Image (cartoon, rainbow, N blue to C red; front, side, top):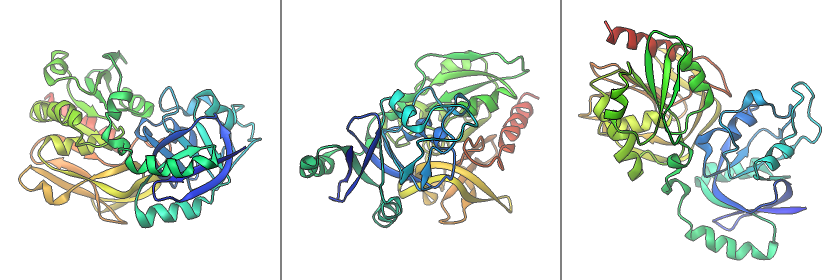
Length: 360
């Protein structure tokens, strides 16, 4: 069955429908990962987006329970050049087609993803829609032009936990996880060092401090870090707690930490999404996993006490911050990876050391 990826500039890509039959619209973004498609599909940071995979064949090792990063597929649709109908039985899991059907998410294959990615890189991120009726293309283009950007919605509110959750791992210290759309691997890595209390993203600082936590990690997540709900929620909480306990931020957590401490962010042309982004940190280059469409404005750091100490090699965007004279630091990339390299997993050890030092 034919389906169509329609972009707001009028460009149309015809392909073959797979996954669940449903129309979908969102922000069209691309990821350069050669593997890790299930982790990407279930990453809450992709909420509101139509994901394009640059690797030409997707689904060749199927899907399995081991690779989930949340309890659902988070993307609004998947775009591929080709999907594998008979994957390797290494994991004895479902096909990518069955996987998308389970979560009622549409896919389109047979698309010239190389051409599509070049368009996004040249013109910036575009809104798009998956439809099945060729006659509806003109009205779809008109609708997309009027449609607000998905990042204007409260996407973090959609993916954050709704109540406080506690994970007693028998550790000496307990830390808060401010859930802006956390990946499961972040919770798993934190749990190697701490007992963890996970809070909804809009939890005020006094509620967190009532639990006498020894530190706080601010997670990844979707959308605009300067959204009004982010400013009055996690940004304020970070500001309140920045002088009280050690804080670590990952991805959106990096951006909202900057906002909470007085800096500004901006929307990137097409963002960083993939497993191979080079970051300069402390005189070394690390290969990192990334998934973000916003960045911290370096010029806005003046007077905030924040110091940019990590930068992307390709475009010199900020990849990490630290707060002068206080144990607050962030990473724009994902040190927990999944998918991607674990080159920077040492940041969790750094956070553990900061918590221990603060308790002395």
